[in-house]
Amino acid sequence: MGAFLILLGIAAAAYGATIMAVRSGTRFYVVWYGIAAVALACGTAAVALGWGNLPLPVHVAVYALIAVLAVVLVLSILTAAVSKTSDPGDLDCIIVLGAQVRRRGVPCQALRHRLDTAVRYLGAHPACQCIVSGGQGPNEPCPEARAMANYLVKHGIERSRIVREDRSTSTVENIRFSRPLIAGVEAAGLVTNDFHLPRALAIARKQGLALRGIAAPSHPWYLPNNLLRECLAIVKGLIRGTV
Image (cartoon, rainbow, N blue to C red; front, side, top):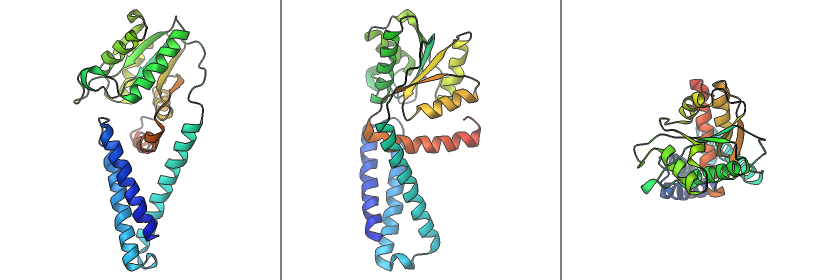
């Protein structure tokens, strides 16, 4: 067990380094460094003292950590294997949720996936309108909604079809501030990455909206990080009553 935990710690630290290198705008990579520290400390203690000689709370903590990581790994494999999209039918409007915008207003990879998915849907449904939702974070050069609208226009979507919601700073606010913009709309959809869609739809339902999900793809390598973050966000949302 000691050697396994040491290897797990090294792997977690290396994975955290790749997440940090992406510069996604969050510091969630710290969680992976925390996992690495726990695994390495317990692994070193197990090698030095023997696994059986460690106190019960350490055993419980280690097995709980391994169980959480196993669940995240299985969810990652399933998310990567399952079809990324389903046909939501004809919609009057879609809401595209924002994500990190980099220098010169360039959308991050996850946001590009969302926007490309929106471009395909809007191209196939020329009567559908689009709301781009996202404010400006402290490390962003402009509101996400502005960068998103510019991206859509560059990819052939008429600006007259795009409405910008540029105040929101969270998924809860994305839905809350977009809600008045779809008042009277019969059928509306929600576009975000596959790992984010279940929580986003749950938040919408909590706010009384029955939106149809349109899943954008995501990079398989980052799925464990994204899904672990989503699991923690869901727990936080349940505590706060937002999901």
